[in-house]
Image (cartoon, rainbow over all chains, first blue to last red; front, side):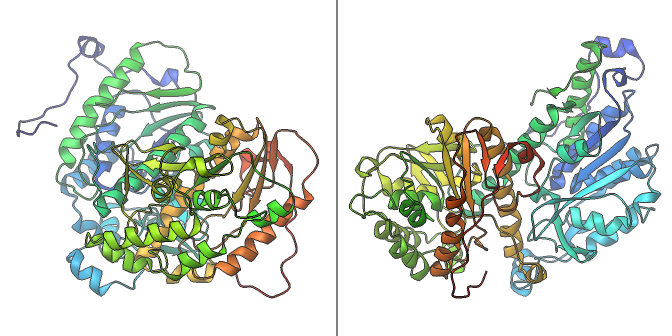
Amino acid sequence: MPEAPALYVPGPRDRNVRALGAALPLARRLPTPVTFVMSGGGSHGAVQWGSLQALSETDIRPDSIIGTSAGALSGSVYAEDPVCGLNRLSYVWAQMNERYLVGDGSLTRKLISNARSSALFDNDAELQTLESIYHARSFEELALPFAAVATDLATGRAKVFDSGALLPALLATSAIPGMLPPVRIDERWYCDGLASANVPAIPALERGAGSLIVLDTGDRDWGSVSSAPTKVATRVAATLRDHSRNRQLKEAAKEVPVLVLPTPVDLGATMDFSESSRAGAHSYSMARQYLTEMALSGSSELPPGLYRGAKS
Amino acid sequence: MLDVLQEAGYVPDLSVGCSFGALNAAAAAVPGTGQVADLSDMWHAIAGDSPFSSPTQAIVRQLGRRTAKSTAEWRETIAVGVPAAHFDELTHPVHVVASDLEAGETTMLHGGSLPAALAAATAMPLILPPVEHDKRLLVDGSFTEGMPVHRALALGARSIVVLDVGGTTVPEPEVGDLRWWQVGATAYSHLVRAQVGPDVTESASQVPIVVLSTDAGNILDFSDPEAMFDAGRVAAGAIASLADTEEAGLYGIPVGFEEYPPFEPLVRQHLKPAAMPSSPQGE
């Protein structure tokens, strides 16, 4: 995104696209069932808001959705009601900031008062936010089959929640380690799915997906590294997540077509929500172009493989 | 583990060491250490007075940008365990795995200053600063490499013996009592460990891979080296049950991957660990 503030209006510029004047025909290229795979990434989840908008302009309709962390939150809003979920999601992202997730209070004070707790913040604020977003309280009330991926804190294994109470599972999948408290469900402790499957492509495959549409959360342009300890730690954490993502995508692409929507790389910190609208607009534009190219490049069913949009 | 293997006659032509495994691999290849490597001095030094014996203090020093003390302490500890200045002094080739911070990729170190390479391979973020090497910042190798078997394969290994210290599994009753920074460390060590499955799967179809695996508990608990040595001896004792074959595949399974589906077609043998030592030990 440009430094100087200029009104940024995304949208199709391509003549072919305008000539179509209808939903992009892409569903015929995708073996069913089609699963949307939505990865975690804090405020970078705004990227998926744009990706979902671009997907809604195609004839692709997901048969199921699986998500981790921020992707589970956005994915379940869509799964609750695919007709109005996308618009509702726009209003959620337009208002979202870190206070709706971790509440008020300075980090310094929390470091002192919560030094011995399982997290620096509690999840009261997040629970209140979730209660105001969803009408559903159980997975069964959602219109589309939906699954949320968390990590079993004791074993490190991915745990897929797809039935029963919805809000505890959403708190678990988004319990950023150290920041938000692990959640106890059925006698076990769970934290953010980022620690096992931040891009849950293999869990999606295990649930019988015929093709995957991966809505990633964008990347951060790290520039040059420094030896500042917190910078090193965040860089290392991001490296681990990238390697995990690459393995998930590589494995899944052996079995089914995996379409990875392109994402911006110029996003800031994962808890900075000030650029959400711009990030959504940017990714809408990129996803729209990618999907157009995929729709125009042929009509035959896609064989297994990784179909990756270029990064910008 | 190393002493059991050496007593059983397994002497490597080549070692690949990642993170603290690099320290052990190098220490075992220092000339004049006798028939059986004794790494106990090094591990008692780590437990006694090093950045890892009091990680909280080391983290506070790091955050305050007072890294000189930690760095000096750690170099001294490395010198106790590995009294050699260069790779070419070692009795057999040792390759050290580190992570290039900027590229987010593995870097293999094999020449030049051995202490510098070992410091890089063990530079755990927040506890020790990255080590500058050829104008690149390097950190602990385990962040880009789960179990570096394919590195050994690329270096020409025809059979591989893995000395695996496990990941971080938290005993069930303690999970609810973890503090915020322990939750963070545990979550990310799960990601480190998860790399093992795909890494081993790729190589096990090409050569026999023997996995001697022990779950040594919390990877940041250096307090009881003797218990660790015992756990390692039990795990390494499994080598005695190894079948006499050269068929590619997996002989033994890394801890935590007992139900990992991609391993199923590769497993040739489940190794039997040796009996526990008679004196009762904890975890």
